[in-house]
Image (cartoon, rainbow, N blue to C red; front, side, top):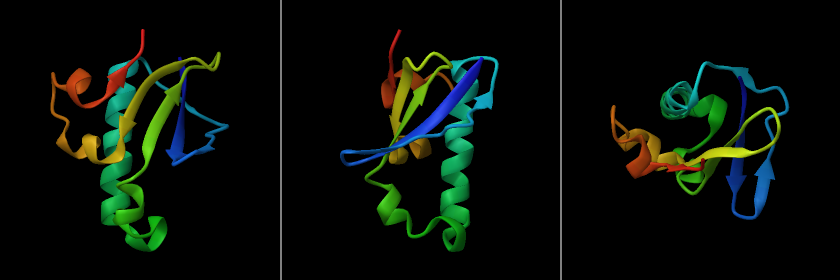
Length: 91
């Protein structure tokens, strides 16, 4: 399934028009975590993390339905088995 990793910054939604082909929502959560690790590791590319700390990933499927939302800081706290407590999954 294709997942689109849109970013919500306040009232602005920055759309991911390309998306990524991933097997399931758990893989999407892992993709968010890897992206946040890159944001921290590569400030020259992504800017100051403080800007990102207020943002949220809004992941949609190929039909445009929201499948999960996760605040950027929550991705740092996430460990296996805790995805529903730090992110907001939508059926």
